Length: 266
Image (cartoon, rainbow, N blue to C red; front, top):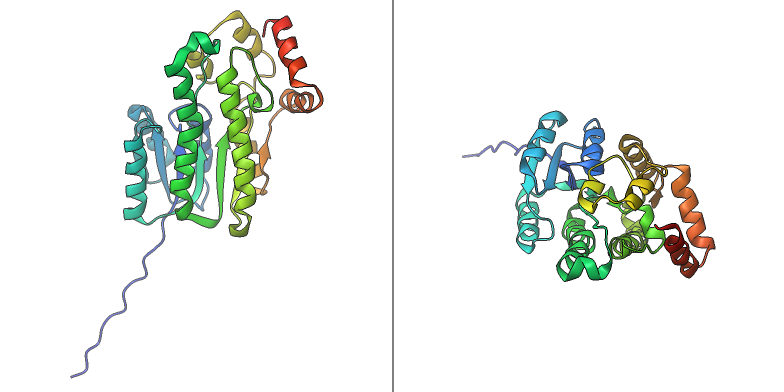
């Protein structure tokens, strides 16, 4: 007797956006602007504050998975790895926006704060990228959030600036490595933005003055970063002051820059 079997319906591939640091600042704004991208079916929102992520998810009008926790925690990394393996999604875009800085001398901040900045800003970013890469779709995108601080050393922001220099150099190399897969790695290097960053970093007369120099709108920084990423560019710098900082950091010896920072009280 002949048996007839109905053909199984093809399994639809889910294309996701994985965004760390999505609870505030540039990470949150990038999620909001990506909500209209038809190439994204689902958001994976990552940050410590689950209530902030739930509020964001309600605004995105697309399915969202909330992965709350500390991105530098090995247990959190293992959880991300396990979910990717089970769900078998394809990642259209990875945004590494989790990060923070603390104002103060290396000695004053001490071992724990200095080490944690490296863990979050550098180690977690590298681990998350490594975990996500096997699930990235060819032609996908990675946005790594650095800072204009990546271009030059900064007194009293020594560790933060160094971590962002690491992000910049790592991202540039990764961009070249992934060319065969047409995956663009764009490093975003904003000037200070009107976000919670300085609430965490600490306030001081120096910071208060610095914040007034070329403060950038988070909406504009996000829009340009997404545009540069779509164009296959490896670097996104928003405003003229940030471009000027990059040029000066190339021209002037860093010893002179450090001397000038000291003279200017920066």
